[in-house]
Image (tube, rainbow, N blue to C red; front, side, top):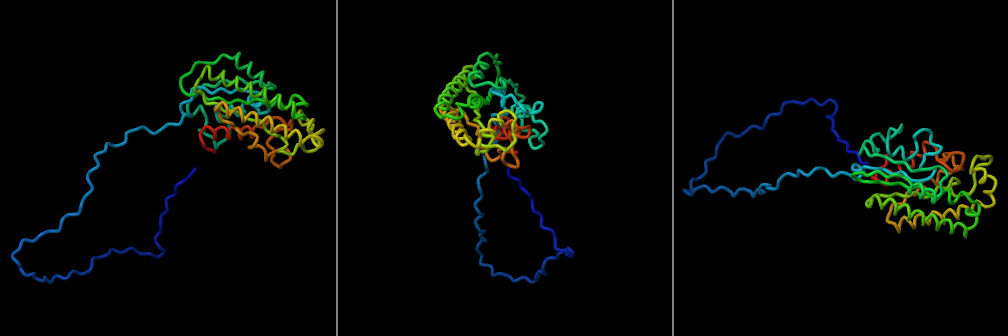
Length: 303
């Protein structure tokens, strides 16, 4: 965001303005010889022709966010705002800013007054998310439709074999791709011009495959016990899953929200880890970071 500043040059200290008078005029007149020829004036300078173009009365352009009639939040526990106290999940913050002053006025309720529908279920795999979408009653709407989808995390984390053995990861990744394609088809069946944004999967270890000793809540317990032995392999296989999500997003012509890259330098081994101590979900403040990431994808603006 660029800011303009006006510069005012102050008068030097001690400056005493006085009324200036013109230089003395020589009143003596030197008579010119009369040649008997009429005096010819110089040609006047050329002047620009008047501007006949009418004033530009076109209204300022609006951004598509100002025209959103519906926001669909589809997905798993991340989309459901799990571990984000109250309504501080990223989808709720995109709908209506809560408590983050830098985003005052930068939400859908302020910009367009859009209606919001959440189709999100904690623990859901991509197949279950697809079923939930198919079972949902989607509203008719005027204006733009924007959609976020968070899927694939539980497909990867639910089975140790999927995390540890690349062959199993490949199978799960292919299924996630097929389910994402089906979700996008479902959305486009109701809203052909919907703007769709798909999130990939974060790495709570920040690429190390390990967490600080003693973290034994939820998924962290598994990482604490086995990370030193299989952590690098799990990180590598997560890359297979995220590559599949990115490839399907590209094939479908939808936008990828690189949640993984945004959080990679803020794993639980850092001083400012952005994940809660279950190794699976962001805290309130970090849902705000996901909101910032998505909002920037929508508008190009960070606040």
